[in-house]
Image (cartoon, rainbow, N blue to C red; front, side, top):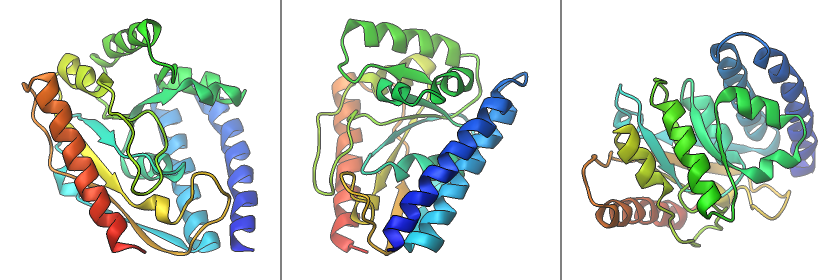
Length: 235
């Protein structure tokens, strides 16, 4: 019953904020829209907690430097994005083009400066990424990317793609890995929610200057090791 009520609330909040953010997107600059997206993420987390009974603890904020970074995050559920929007001010992000199937989102993503890539990858996706990186060089915003490019069930891992390395290298920013066990409460393939407390954790930054192989290996080890520990801990 709680999961069904949250599912209704999820769509009501999403449609309402899509319309609201469309209005904010018409204003000059990105600040107003950034505030709207923060409010949307916060509203979804409140609904998760008070309707679905899912409480999310965020740890490791001390690992986020004052300077803009690239977040390389584990992606276990749609709730991951809400956590990041609600906890990182003025966030830029890399998203999959599957979001374009929601008609209201395209102008919002465009105004927000999101880098929208094809989930199939390839040369065209690389060109879009390069264009987005060129834009972001002049913006003082953190950037979120999910290196696997897929939702993963707890205990599951996909191949880590190198787009996160190119973001860090070309923007000259450190990478902050992000681990989570939110998938224990929010199954990516079901509307069901399991009440309890889950964790999203910002991990120690990975410095610039590593080779691609060393960087990708360190990122994967950091994210997967801590994620597996959180999953083993349960809810």
